[in-house]
Image: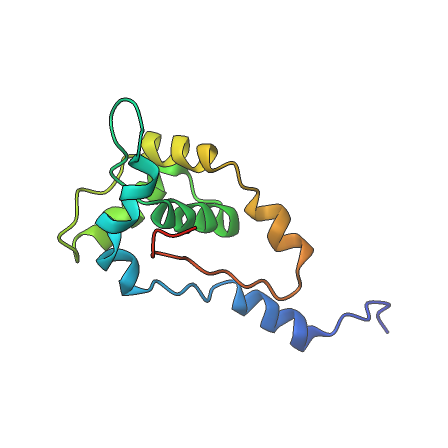
Length: 124
């Protein structure tokens, strides 16, 4: 007899839900519109990648812990299916995730049923 009282069905479902990432095509369709806000008044090179894309990559980084170079490969594979700019390189991904100053891991650990949404409207 084991002393582990874990409810394995619920535990398994929670692990499966971690993989349920919805990539909404509106994110790609609203790419240029979303970039207007973070580039407004920005000095220097404008951002080429919207925060929603960086948030998606940050989520993948938090959940699956791939190296940044593998994240670059992931987004390159997705970029083959859209007409937007080239996929960001791993240094850009790393810097932008850090600039967003979010702690996805802490947020996910606090909730047993995390809900993750990516807003591509460009509105706060």
